[in-house]
Image (tube, rainbow, N blue to C red; front, top):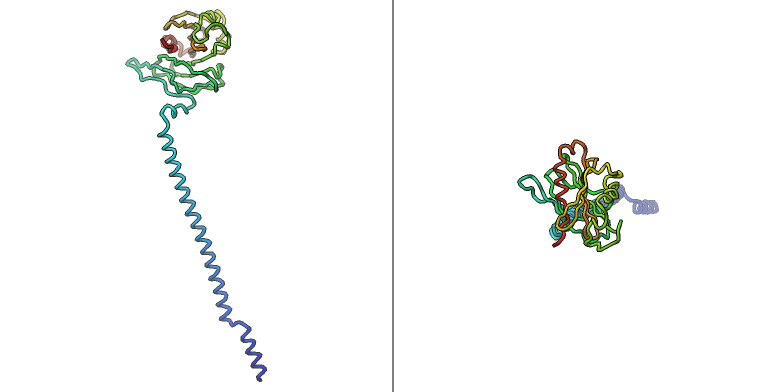
Length: 267
């Protein structure tokens, strides 16, 4: 009897009761619950930190951009718009505006171009500047391009004199010392207008003097007008083209624009 009691007592001591097993499972469950809560809290903290960092990044970026924009001079900011810096003055009482090439303008040229002497022309309010494309026939020598729905298209081309001559003082040499009136348009015609120029295509050709510089002025059969002069190692060319309707309506206006073109030489 004593042995049985001892064995039973031992069994009862070694074997967990139902209450003890339940409490163990409950403790384990509570432990997993606490771990899960810690993990969730950690995830929530990470999300909060991401939101804070994101907000700080946006605020900081906005402040930095604002400071940089205020710090840059107006000329530098405008100079970043693909070479197009506004150059038109306000219109006069007759609706005409003077365009003067801005100093900050880059044009369609590549790197390595020396300083360009400003030029100007006068046009009505229908003209606006458009982007320069290297796909144009004159390529990187196009300095500026303008269009008018009613009047046509105008291009300013700057060609190095060394392309076709190395004689004389290239800084100040006059165009008539380089090439004749007739030879110039035949040589540059294909590049300017896309087609060869024959004698019958030249409706008129004349020389005019502006501030001691010679300008060649042409009217061509394909509704085109050209003005050219030389200064500072370059040939400055203004070319206006238009369709038949624009030519009929705006021929006189376009001739006025062409003859107003001049390089702003000193002296």
